[in-house]
Length: 337
Image (tube, rainbow, N blue to C red; front, side):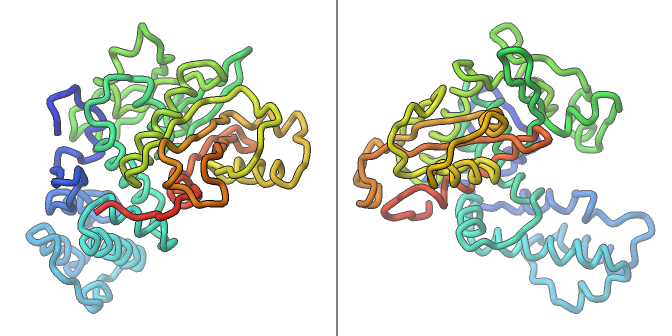
């Protein structure tokens, strides 16, 4: 990685190197990090079979694991966790790089735990955004792998990390926080020009709020993250502009960035008018333009694509960045090497 300011230490990027194409080959150190997860680390009461399997994979994280070794684990929950872990390990190793593993999982609809997919998303974004000096872009990128709680305050839409918001009244210090030497806190600060310099030292705490209202830097920063994501994973250059409203523009193609936004997009596509309550949930609207229209399917070549982001009924924003990779009208959706 470059000598620029570091961020997202918990992504495990320091356990990875780039290949000639700029992607992240799966390393033994990265695989071993999964063995420290609380679901996998054998508890004091673990049976000998589980301890032996854990020790064997610490020595060689790529070694084949026979079904009989998992079946020999006494605890049923532990057996299930280990099988999921081994399936995930095998998927990463088979595809060679984090980027290829991610693309294969989302294109083939392979179901893995959200925690694993979120961690992979974070590590890939850490690679794509390496050297980024804009705290607003990095904070917006957190939305790709961490749900946000939204609060409406006058003319602002404040996004707060959902997990952090849930801990506001409950001081918590996780083992990972202690391992990395990070300070634990539940204080929330609004990201601004004044507070932005502190982002790097607290990036693993996810404790900075971001204003996502139209015309604010947060929404524009989210558009920038979309640009980086598509460029890194699809090698396609696009321009993304935040919009205040649709203004009766042609609706040739759209991508919902979350399930609620997809529902709203379907409604617009079918010619339905949005009621006030639905409009209030639409927290992000963007126009995406391909710099090279030749990358688009002929049906909509040269036309703008619209992206939507919306909150759920309980004011949670759960972005699905995979929708950008599967939903755009790309002529040849080729994976990175």
